[in-house]
Amino acid sequence: MFQFQLNGEALWRWREVCGQPNTVFALLQLSIVPLGYRLTEPAEERVGSALAETIRRFWRKNQHIKSTTKRKQMRAETWIKLGVKPEEIEESPKDVLAHLIEENNNLREIVGGKGGRSLQLNAAKTSPLWK
Image 1: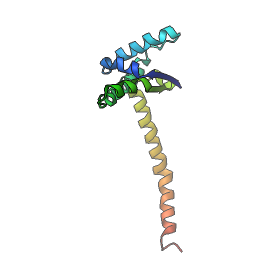
Image 2 (image 1 turned 30 degrees about the vertical axis):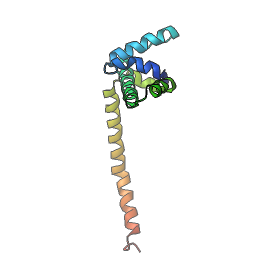
Image 3 (image 1 turned 180 degrees about the vertical axis):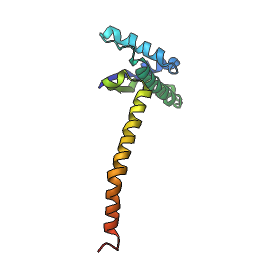
Image 4 (image 1 turned 90 degrees about the horizontal axis):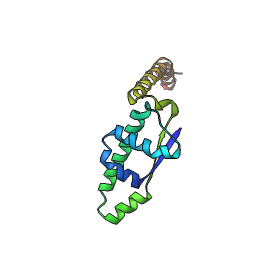
């Protein structure tokens, strides 16, 4: 799993673009290139959207704090981690959702076919008529 760790101060500076996942991805890309890393373009939608949502949540939490000193303290002490599985980087959120729906349907078939019957048998064994 690939993990990005960002300081609250960086999140605070990027708050103006939290509704623009493509811009958030571009900012992330610019900040990691000097470190020797580069994300591929297919990761733009997935990583950009996840990071934009994280920034939005952090910004909202920070807005509820009345004290300026406590806001600054929160920005200085907060670190967020964003984890992305390598196989999911090139998938869009729609692709991941379709995969999860398919997996859920398969599990329902298994439970409906085999599990349903064993539940009926167990219920019959506990019935007062089972003697």
